[in-house]
Length: 237
Length: 201
Image 1 (cartoon, chains in turn brown, orange):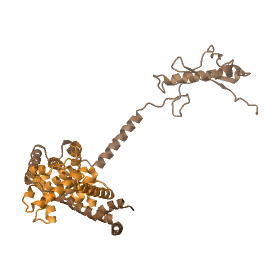
Image 2 (image 1 turned 180 degrees about the vertical axis):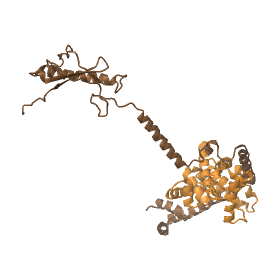
Image 3 (image 1 turned 90 degrees about the vertical axis):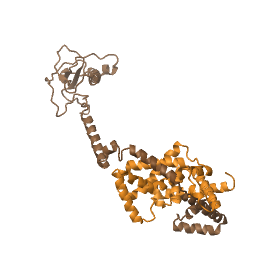
Image 4 (image 1 turned 60 degrees about the horizontal axis):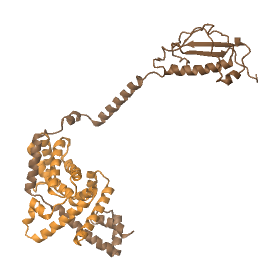
């Protein structure tokens, strides 16, 4: 260890602030190092000068002046705690912290429960939800089948987006009412923007399809669903 | 530490102080003034060593006693009083030091004019007293150059004579930290003193 590092230890040893094992180490170094011995001797003198400060005495005039000014100010101040301290003094601070935590919990619960219900994004009924008035699904002739189905799926997505975003939407009251549409109601023809739909092969028998149309309370939104009566057979079957 | 009358034992002093605190809490002004008398040297001395001049020390001491009056109802036992006063004194001095350019010291002549050194004139050995006063002035100037925490640690440990553990408790720090601050401060004061005596400052 270098002498510079011993200086700090010597400074502690000078007033007995060093643990015994380190004191032994410092003493061993001091016995071998004249420069550190000189440093230690000078430090003792410096410490004696520091201790002289403890003898500094203030005159009675200064102390009397201090007492007078303090007592004058005290006489105009009420003794003890101020209003707010008195207000909170009887409270145990642990109790106060617990009460604050409970209040926060209560406010959070009220806020959470007062939020609007999550809005449904599909017409899938919750088991506990009342079933809306539904008329029986009827078979409907379809001419273009798969292409129409794809097109309608696109329309349905768009309609659902509008339906969900409508500001006046209310989850239950706005729920779709299934209605049978007149036979004249037609499904939009697939346009040129959807070549895949046009290329889709039409099924041989329209009687195998069921067309289900759902009219929401918004007259501009109608949900149309086409499903096979029988599951479509694959080539492997 | 609290001023104790010559005819008082420590136990009697503690009991008397408890009674004084109790009376002061109930609003008895004389009891509070007696508490000031018992602690004014401690508070004034610590503030003077921390701030380096008598005027600031007096202002700091006044603030400390006003706070004591305000929070006296918190003390259940009088023995808590001295450490609490040290802690508040150090804090008040830190605040004052920041506001008023800490570390300004006054000359020996100014201290004489303020009456802070009145007791010196009554001594026979004027020369040695003057030398001691000069030493004190050098150390006070050296203290003013120290960082706040080192200054507080060495004032409480070496000048007020508290144990390192007590200093750590008052400064709300660990013993090892306080020990490190004390050793740094001692070395710095020694080196400052060397420079002054060799005419480099």
